[in-house]
Length: 389
Image 1 (cartoon, rainbow, N blue to C red):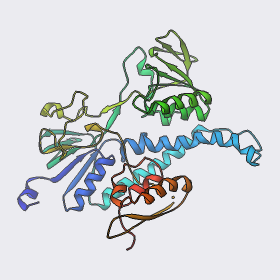
Image 2 (image 1 turned 60 degrees about the horizontal axis):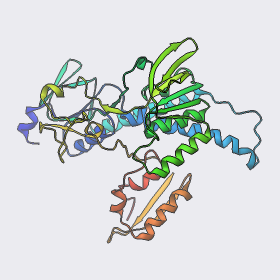
Image 3 (image 1 turned 90 degrees about the horizontal axis):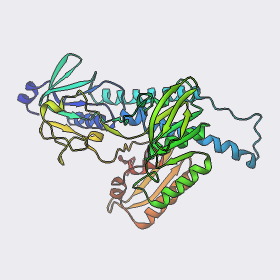
Image 4 (image 1 turned 90 degrees about the vertical axis):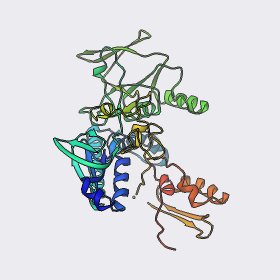
């Protein structure tokens, strides 16, 4: 930046949203010498860390113990009493882990020299942002506010939960119902079934996971049914009524189910409310996502956007630590000539890596592959810094 530019604006880049995309952009810009600030009104790390893939993965691990305990006898393990699941322990330990991750994100920003400002930001004009009554000017403004759960309207829809609340319930729902047919709905139905809930899944179509391979969809349906998940296809929720004994869910098929909690896993939409984009006339797609070009610029070039607000796959490839992974790469050709792993399920992971090495693929091929998050295996496609040559 020139001296004139630096004196003209408070910041070179002002990022709205401290999720994965916003934090990465802020750190990258700061590393070039730019003056960067980030505004966040909720939590560091965004959807994935706080109410998405990280807590979901922890709860998924917890649910898998159900099968492990059942299988233990065949391997010689005799349990002194029937295993008992304690929801509060899982919930509170999850809270502690996420606080730890929040702290890591905060330190990443601090170490990069990025200023963190608490509060929901509103864009006043192409170079001005207001946060908690204070105004800041910036040469570039980056919108990275992510998505927000969307719930269809029907009588009693206000009684439903979203992914924002479901991980932190005061008591465990022994009768649980999920509305939706995407992979999030399927995962939550499987998790709560595994934790011990009597679980229902409601989907308006004839089979969930639309867009996935047909055999995968059918196999998943059969496996979930075999595990005890009650699947209700080609129906929807007509209304929900509060009773003393629980929630009465009336389906369009006429069936009435009484449950303790209803999760609406019906999709997410850009979290743009109150941001000020409408007043500036920034172009949005019919879906409500922000339109950007290949430089992430909106219809106002000084305002950028990235992440879930722009549409596309809602993925967050972030590396996982607690194992050792190493790639051996030929400097001259960039070909991966070997790989090592020490950690859980190393054999399962390394079989696929062995095929890649045998095929003679390059480190660039690894780098261009989207990680399956959160898994340990994704580390192989997020390794960036050579440890030695």
